[in-house]
Amino acid sequence: MRFEHRFRVKASLAEVADFHSRSSNMPKLSPPPLIVRMRRAPELLAAGDEMEFTLWAGPIPIRWIARIEDASPSGFVDRQEVGPFASWRHRHVFARVTDDTTEVLDQVEASLRRHWWWGPVGLAMWVGLPLLFAYRGWKTRQLLERDLL
Image (cartoon, rainbow, N blue to C red; front, side, top):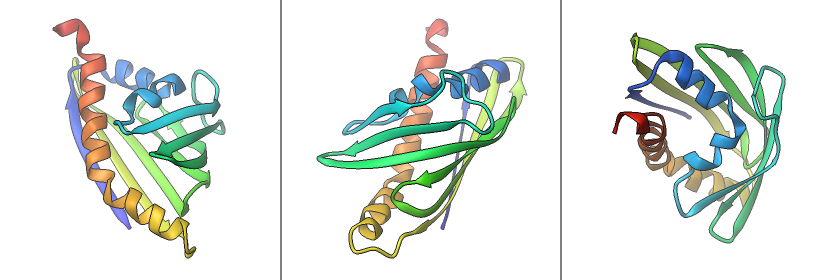
């Protein structure tokens, strides 16, 4: 399965890359009613780092460990090591449009687990990706463009 979402934000490429490298920003990008509780992650993410968190989808706790790969000023990959999917690879790409505008491209490739519980949970999560990433785009713009308001 493949999913892609893109949006633009009025912020420099460096500001967007810095924002996304901070593990503390991940919970801010999750729409209600999802709740993200960080368990373990360095403040600044780099290649080889792991993020461990619990994603609460209502009363359902979903443990997730992601490994950061291919980190650079133009993006990074987070790959699920532990979680609800058989595989999950999320590529974050940041591209300069102008000095003060950056395009953010999210590309997700995933496959569902063949499991009586995690298969349907993963499918429900997959179906919700358009809403999740629309929220993430809105919230990223809100947080990075706040000085422009």
